[in-house]
Amino acid sequence: MKLSRIEQETIILYNEAESTAEVFTYDQKLLTKLERLTEKYPEQIARTGDRQFIVPKACVLVREPYSEERRKAASERAKANGYRPPASTRGKPDS
Image (tube, rainbow, N blue to C red):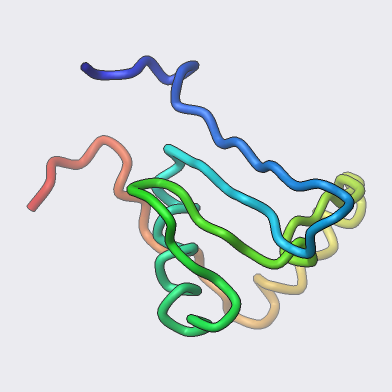
């Protein structure tokens, strides 16, 4: 059964007693990142299911949003240093 976009959740669970968090996600970008980190840090990050991982709680971060000024300054620095974002693959057929 295909899930709607609203049903494709990411769930992060942790408690005060344990030093790890459980991450369940349908986000393909996050899945790819977690798979890469599992290979790079197998002693700290483990895959426990098809879309489920155990990570150190310190990896879970909620930060203050960027202000418009900070975003603009970062964009200008990147452009001045010749950074070009990767080409978008949205809307392109799979090869």
